[in-house]
Image (cartoon, rainbow, N blue to C red; front, side, top):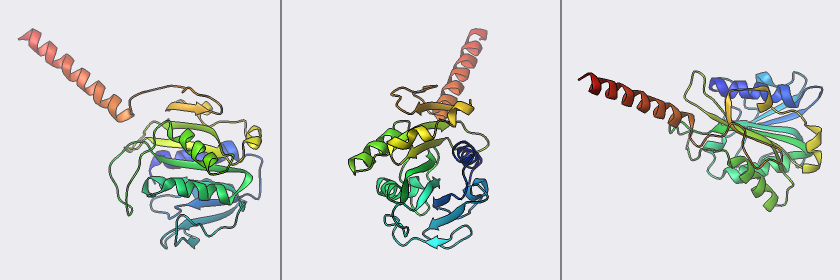
Length: 231
């Protein structure tokens, strides 16, 4: 797990679980490859890690990722990090998260908004600023009252990844139970969308990769112009 993914999960749990105890938390894609969300979860929670292969951090094997082995309305929180890009039909997986959540339950997704092709066992998708509201619309089309509380794209640190982060409540009537937001505590993000907003805070049409490339091209152009004038 890369650095910002782990940091984002810490922000999520600190923001959305303060003052709550005995939470039932399901993690989709829980195998501990180079880090785990579990270490940031409340210490008194009931944590169940799901994945399609055995490994550290996996409590239950999933045979069909679009039919999770969890009963309806079981979980208080469903979390998933660096997994949805590897799901061929991630919208079906998102619906499964809604199914297993309690009516006031939260869904946290961290997925790449950029980065290299990396198969595990496949690599299919990247998530952009409108992805959060698109998943809300999909869930509602399927009969849920899922509501996006916030979404944003974090800036990179020591790795290549810019993470798309989205937090949902399963039923819109419980949105007021969660007044705090991750992105309001941070500066290292772009394209943040808040509950009910149709615009973005810190909007950018370019990804961080493109911004860096643009800056390099501008510097190279300046160097070439200076060299040309000197000649």
